[in-house]
Length: 80
Image 1 (cartoon, rainbow, N blue to C red):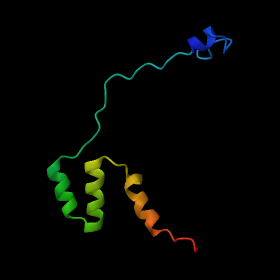
Image 2: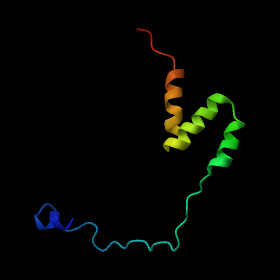
Image 3: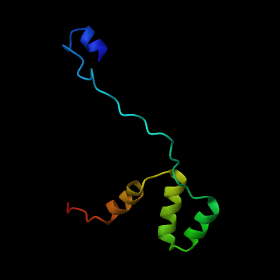
Image 4: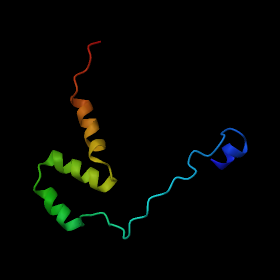
């Protein structure tokens, strides 16, 4: 913003005087599952869903990214 004010693109900095929030103390760690409990859980699930879980776990995909291709395949196609 400083450059925009300096070059005359803005009259004043709109963020001037804004107070930033106080950072939270401590840092939470994200929960994770190790290989052994994950394998045990996947063995109890039907094959199609187990493949989805493996894909999500090993690629880091979010649930919506794993499900999107499946939903697209299930949607009816428009007649030509």
